Image (cartoon, rainbow, N blue to C red; front, side, top):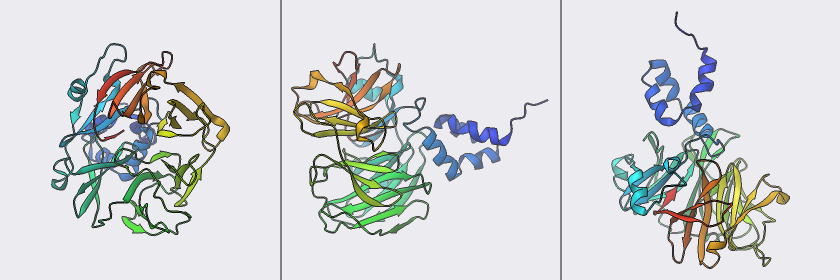
Length: 351
């Protein structure tokens, strides 16, 4: 007699499997194929495999010349692997780009990532936009735009209140800010009322490498004004801009943000020191906790530095560094030692 597993239990179990296993499971029967390709299941699986899940696969996507690559960060032995740019590329797997429009990465930009999905733009005068799941190779064409303004910026996030992925588009030099929101559920644009009272000229312009960071239902960017001690935020549910204030300060009393990321589901901030801080309870200023001072980088001109993830034993952390001497370099750090080792180099990234 065969072993019977209730349907509701199967529904709870399947989202816990990695994406590669689910691709194979689609061949079990028509019912499983239908269930595993259902958009709601795909969304739930992506969230379950997101960064908040400590057992999720930790992958890093990067562009090298005309190709897009993915590498599983857990494959590297933090004690014995001495990685160079050659070895990190040799560990990586080239990703098949979604359509002929995205036939190469030469004119393709990674605009953001969320729940394991990558938001891509390709083109010159007419831009093609799509979402790509790098683990399964599945993609979805979103829209074509003919906006030619160089300061048109995009961000990508997930609104859990409506279970909908959203893309926001805005001009950083317009006043009032012209905001558009694209809903993947409705496959359409809309124009919410903008509440921001100043232009976004001081928003860090290079969103090719400085992407919006999502924690909870908010996107975050580092800004220089009008309040350099705050982060610009966007509420995905209310569809409005705001600020996260009361940031931690360097030893000299200043707040100079050089990196934003998410570490174990918490907002992570890197100051110029360089020091790394974690907001253990979102929105509560008193919950900012210093993670580490990185003494070895104190004399570097650091443009950008932030953690990517923990690896292996949960103690060592991978960092991405852009500095005057080291461009797009991945570092490996043991917080108990505070001396990072070089891990590899790459170009435009997402994770």
